[in-house]
Image 1 (cartoon, each protein chain N blue to C red):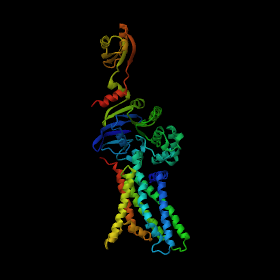
Image 2 (image 1 turned 180 degrees about the horizontal axis):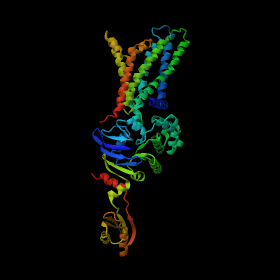
Image 3 (image 1 turned 180 degrees about the vertical axis):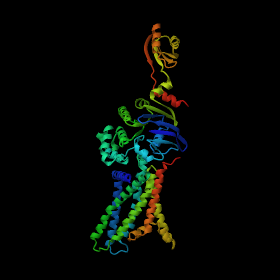
Image 4 (image 1 turned 90 degrees about the vertical axis):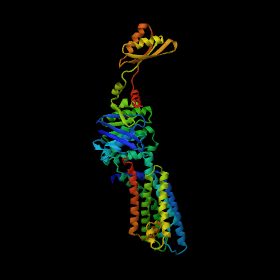
Length: 311
Length: 249
């Protein structure tokens, strides 16, 4: 669906995208992840034919973005960051206008606009003026606009920015739902979003792809197993020697707390689960135990690790 | 072509939704009304060397409208799309840059023409209530309005170019006004100061001189060519500015 080859975009003075190469298969939901200014929006603008790359090529939906830009634009639905809309138009008017521009035949226009309004939950505001809508509704109008001509590929730039938690959930559910029938490329810097919605993640930093895999694989490959957190009533120095000596442990950091308690963080050698061993050790020495958890690896850790690696 | 019609329709809606259009409309009606009143007063005093149409189309108020209104009408057209980012949604839909420019220009020109429609009532009033039916000839009326249309075309095209070159509407309006005034006053200056053989050359780009011809019912091919090529030139530049976004740097 998308085949990007060595894409470069230079602005006056700096290079936003350095030789990006990646591909997206039909039916995938791919999350484009990166810190602010990493080149996400630039890449999406290039793929949606808003501006050309300085060099390199990309083929979207079977057409070259530079040579056959109109054909590409007929087949994609692109929602820019901040969702620009005409504030003086009514929702229905706007969607009709967009459907007409995108070549939905007059006879089908009304049905299509009704369908996407229903799907995006804006059917009840279709007579309202866009300028008077809340941010959440505007976002949904933007989403309805990207879907109105039933595009093969949907490109969403930060689709949940500025929404409240409920709305974010709704939009995510909608994106997941879309993924069943469409190919979706979305950008975000909210990590749980990628974990929840995407089948694959592309992490981009300073205009380069630094990782590309499923969210699960990324977490496993980059971080190994998680640390184990133990809180027990024992002498800190003693606890440290015992816990660090457990089979599979690489080391332990221990700090004293009030009331004779101490908190230890156990680092595994590879991916070992140290909880059972730690519990056994505490029981064997008659130490009271009040907390025992294994820290879950989050994509955030991976993200921070990857994007700060070359600093 | 189909896209031009779709975009044109939206632009007209935007015009009629914006307060500026109504403010401009009221000002135009007011100024032409004063102008009309002065003509009636002059006519009531007895015979004059000039026809009422020459008074009307060459009057100060007509020139104020011609120089001020197009910049105000066109300032929003391109600048606002850039400022609000709607240009991004628009240009990622299957729309050609030429269609975009054409629709914007045509909507501006069309609205400019609508503003002059009420003045046709003055023509009717003069014809209907004057005893001398020769006061108003059809030729000069048509010529005068053709002149307005042609000048409107050029000035709206200048406004489009100014609007396309910035994201700030005020800068767009001021820039368009400055270019229009430069054209207008340079035309007058050289026309009035040119001696003998050069006169015809300077006349060829003096809007004031053109309007004097038009309002006498004199329409020359070279005038049509001047305004058509002028508007064409500024639209070409507008298109290049819009397209500059697509240049590989």
